[in-house]
Length: 287
Length: 287
Image (cartoon, rainbow over all chains, first blue to last red; front, side, top):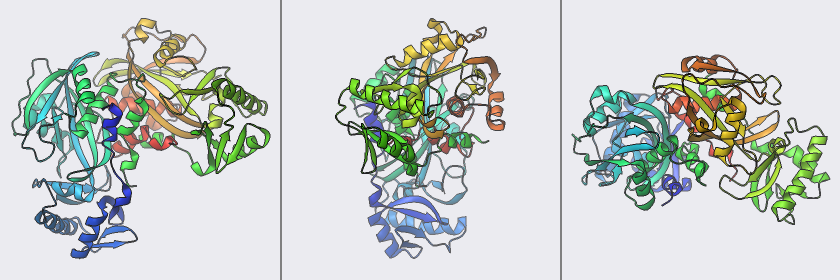
């Protein structure tokens, strides 16, 4: 599969099947039409008007909205609609940098198409053309994408924790990276996409970090989420991306972003411009 | 001016004033409505139909299209509509990686809103948080943006020359960089934008390169296009970007892209996601 197809796989979204979800007069999500209609029937807090699914404006505070959304998420769980309930509160915002409107169980986020923030860290050894990357293989028991290839460290951003703090925490849990080393990671950009998955709509912003680790460093998983780590030369990773479907859909484009920034994919590639544009699609936002 | 405003300044474009320009049934440009109507009156090769400005399909070869477009560009020059005639052929494509449809004088490109390719190279010294960048000050006699701040090396991509070859050529002309050093530059991505300027519509794709130069290296302009070079710490450049209007509009966002990739602007910035999305706007394309 060409790099551009990996990018395209992160943008499988037909807006005509979705209704914007409005809270406090802000469009903050995209809900599948069938689900929106069903929820509006059984939930007194929700109403469809002028083609928009609206949370009642009587729910005017963080606390009231959080309680109402917990009720709705619980009902979806009871119906078996939420595949991966995590017992982890997630903070919903209109957009990055805006105030938190309410919290909701992270597993419910794709049902509403809220903007989902996460951190992904490329761990690498070497420099220039002589680079190796640490690649994680996800545990076969992960609720999403079991057995797929992943970054050295990655995770969603739980409510109430900063991006760097979350990176340090995930680095410790997923790869046993000491805090002092993890804090050397540098932010290097973000990828944004909007795509339909088995869980629902993933409308994500992933913050990317690069961390150069010492040649002798060996990551070690401590939370059971990663089954194995491999230190592969970039060329091998490029072949895997193109010849197999081994990488998780979003981890693939984080690697492609790394390959672009580090000069392994350059303007000689016919799809260069479209690949880069596909890593950050404004259309993925609903404003 | 905040970083996000620098990015917004590269996206000043109201499509309702423009008509797509169609060649060989492909939309390859955007022409201001007034100009399109006037050209269609005096030029037998052009016709407006169904809201599109079309170059006659009888012009079926590279050679015929190039001759017809040269005639049109010459007329625009004689009318004084082309501010910066450069006597430099530019290759027009539907998009990067697609075949060249015809050549045209580079100074005429903004009149038609063709996709404009260029190379910009960030020259830097140091690493991590201790970085200096080489900044060029454009000559006061440049036809566009005289006296503004620029990258160490930048230039449009003339017809018939590869991206890396052009970078090496511009590096020699603009900064007297030896070929062996220039070839160490690494491609690191691209920025795309579409904005109205004094010259017309700039619908550009700029290929970005980073080049680490030795601490003792001193760029020296050889073609009269750069008046002076400064080696500034990144913090000083960040202040200049925010507190002055010294940088040329597109050079500003090349620097911002560098600051994002190198971790000087990170997720703590409220506008982080919008800045990144603004560096590559798919809407800048017309497909």
